[in-house]
Image (tube, rainbow, N blue to C red; front, side):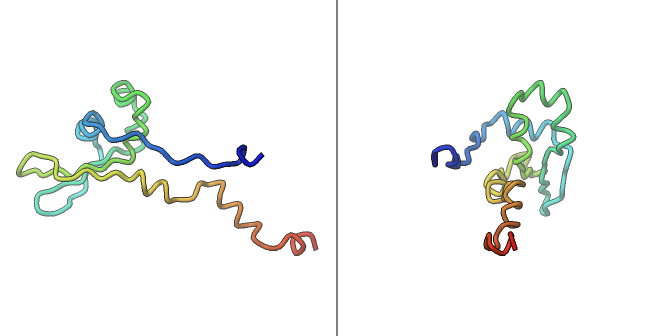
Length: 110
C-alpha cells in the first residue's frame, strides 16, 4: 500500500544545443544584464505558438526553464541558466492544501 503513495523523483530532460538555439531564435523577452549582455527568455505565450511547437515538439515546455545570457559585443553565449531546479523546490499546488490539516484531528472534529 505504501508503494502506491510513494513520490516519484523529479526528473527533467538535460539541456541540449537545440534547446539553447531555440531560445536564441524564439526569445521574446530580453532584459539588459549590463556590460553589453542581455538575458533572453521565451514567454509562455510564445511557447504556445505553432512555430515553436513545430520545431521543438514535446520539449517546448522545457524551454520555459531556460535563460540564455547573450553578449552582444562578442556575439556569443556567456551563460545558460536552467531554472528547473527552482521549479522543483516549489511546492506543488495540491501540497498547499495539506497545511489546512496541521491541527490535531480531535480539534478539527470538535
